[in-house]
Length: 131
Image 1 (cartoon, one colour):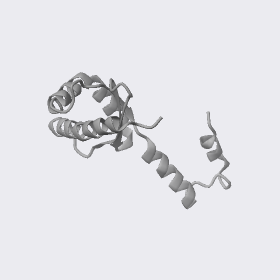
Image 2 (cartoon, one colour):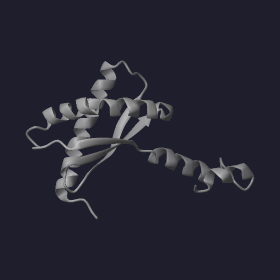
Image 3 (cartoon, helix red, strand yellow):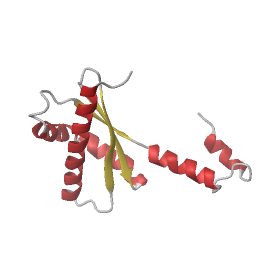
Protein backbone atom coordinates (compact mmCIF):
# COMPACT_ATOMS: atom_id res chain seq x y z
CA UNK A 1 0.00 0.00 0.00
CA UNK A 2 1.36 3.38 -0.99
CA UNK A 3 2.01 6.10 1.56
CA UNK A 4 -0.50 8.95 1.78
CA UNK A 5 0.55 12.55 1.28
CA UNK A 6 0.19 13.12 5.03
CA UNK A 7 2.53 10.21 5.81
CA UNK A 8 5.10 11.48 3.31
CA UNK A 9 4.93 15.02 4.67
CA UNK A 10 5.34 13.92 8.29
CA UNK A 11 8.18 11.59 7.24
CA UNK A 12 10.05 14.39 5.51
CA UNK A 13 9.59 16.80 8.45
CA UNK A 14 10.85 14.14 10.86
CA UNK A 15 13.75 13.22 8.58
CA UNK A 16 15.01 16.79 8.42
CA UNK A 17 14.71 17.32 12.18
CA UNK A 18 16.21 13.94 13.13
CA UNK A 19 19.28 14.77 11.03
CA UNK A 20 19.69 18.04 12.94
CA UNK A 21 19.25 16.35 16.33
CA UNK A 22 21.69 13.52 15.57
CA UNK A 23 24.33 15.81 14.04
CA UNK A 24 24.13 18.12 17.06
CA UNK A 25 24.42 15.17 19.46
CA UNK A 26 27.37 13.77 17.51
CA UNK A 27 29.26 17.07 17.56
CA UNK A 28 28.57 17.63 21.26
CA UNK A 29 29.60 14.04 22.01
CA UNK A 30 32.96 14.60 20.37
CA UNK A 31 32.51 12.03 17.63
CA UNK A 32 34.86 12.80 14.77
CA UNK A 33 35.06 10.99 11.46
CA UNK A 34 31.61 9.45 11.79
CA UNK A 35 28.86 10.28 9.36
CA UNK A 36 25.25 9.62 10.31
CA UNK A 37 22.56 10.22 7.73
CA UNK A 38 18.85 9.50 7.76
CA UNK A 39 18.12 7.72 4.50
CA UNK A 40 14.39 7.19 4.99
CA UNK A 41 11.56 7.75 7.47
CA UNK A 42 8.41 5.67 7.04
CA UNK A 43 5.36 6.61 9.08
CA UNK A 44 2.57 4.10 9.74
CA UNK A 45 -0.97 4.73 8.49
CA UNK A 46 -2.22 5.72 11.95
CA UNK A 47 0.80 8.08 12.36
CA UNK A 48 1.75 6.43 15.67
CA UNK A 49 5.13 4.92 14.67
CA UNK A 50 7.96 6.31 12.56
CA UNK A 51 10.57 3.85 11.32
CA UNK A 52 13.86 5.69 10.88
CA UNK A 53 16.53 4.14 8.62
CA UNK A 54 20.08 5.32 9.30
CA UNK A 55 23.19 5.07 7.17
CA UNK A 56 26.30 5.17 9.32
CA UNK A 57 29.84 5.52 7.99
CA UNK A 58 32.17 3.79 8.77
CA UNK A 59 30.11 0.60 8.78
CA UNK A 60 32.01 -1.04 11.64
CA UNK A 61 30.70 1.59 14.09
CA UNK A 62 27.10 1.15 12.92
CA UNK A 63 25.75 -1.30 15.50
CA UNK A 64 27.45 0.49 18.40
CA UNK A 65 25.98 3.84 17.37
CA UNK A 66 22.56 2.31 16.70
CA UNK A 67 22.52 0.88 20.24
CA UNK A 68 23.40 4.32 21.63
CA UNK A 69 20.71 6.00 19.57
CA UNK A 70 18.11 3.42 20.65
CA UNK A 71 18.99 3.95 24.31
CA UNK A 72 18.51 7.71 23.86
CA UNK A 73 15.24 7.42 21.89
CA UNK A 74 13.13 9.16 24.60
CA UNK A 75 15.46 12.17 24.58
CA UNK A 76 15.48 12.30 20.77
CA UNK A 77 11.68 12.01 20.69
CA UNK A 78 11.35 14.86 23.22
CA UNK A 79 13.69 17.09 21.21
CA UNK A 80 11.72 16.35 18.04
CA UNK A 81 8.43 17.09 19.81
CA UNK A 82 9.80 20.50 20.80
CA UNK A 83 10.89 21.24 17.24
CA UNK A 84 7.65 20.09 15.58
CA UNK A 85 5.12 21.27 18.16
CA UNK A 86 3.53 23.66 15.66
CA UNK A 87 3.39 21.05 12.89
CA UNK A 88 2.39 17.84 14.70
CA UNK A 89 -0.16 17.33 17.45
CA UNK A 90 1.33 14.04 18.55
CA UNK A 91 4.88 12.80 18.12
CA UNK A 92 5.08 9.27 16.72
CA UNK A 93 7.11 6.63 18.54
CA UNK A 94 10.51 6.24 16.91
CA UNK A 95 12.07 2.96 15.82
CA UNK A 96 15.64 3.06 14.50
CA UNK A 97 17.15 0.63 11.99
CA UNK A 98 20.42 0.39 10.05
CA UNK A 99 19.96 0.96 6.32
CA UNK A 100 22.46 -1.37 4.69
CA UNK A 101 21.42 -0.64 1.11
CA UNK A 102 24.67 1.25 0.38
CA UNK A 103 26.71 -1.75 1.50
CA UNK A 104 24.53 -4.02 -0.65
CA UNK A 105 25.02 -1.76 -3.69
CA UNK A 106 28.78 -1.74 -3.08
CA UNK A 107 28.87 -5.55 -3.08
CA UNK A 108 26.95 -5.65 -6.37
CA UNK A 109 29.37 -3.14 -7.92
CA UNK A 110 32.36 -5.22 -6.80
CA UNK A 111 30.81 -8.30 -8.37
CA UNK A 112 30.10 -6.47 -11.63
CA UNK A 113 33.64 -5.08 -11.79
CA UNK A 114 34.98 -8.59 -11.44
CA UNK A 115 36.65 -8.01 -8.09
CA UNK A 116 34.71 -10.97 -6.72
CA UNK A 117 34.52 -13.72 -9.31
CA UNK A 118 32.68 -16.79 -7.97
CA UNK A 119 33.72 -18.83 -11.03
CA UNK A 120 37.43 -18.45 -10.28
CA UNK A 121 36.96 -18.49 -6.50
CA UNK A 122 34.27 -21.05 -5.55
CA UNK A 123 34.56 -20.09 -1.85
CA UNK A 124 32.55 -16.94 -2.65
CA UNK A 125 29.50 -19.01 -3.58
CA UNK A 126 28.82 -19.70 0.09
CA UNK A 127 28.50 -15.95 0.67
CA UNK A 128 25.92 -15.61 -2.07
CA UNK A 129 23.51 -18.34 -1.01
CA UNK A 130 20.36 -17.25 0.75
CA UNK A 131 19.99 -18.59 4.22
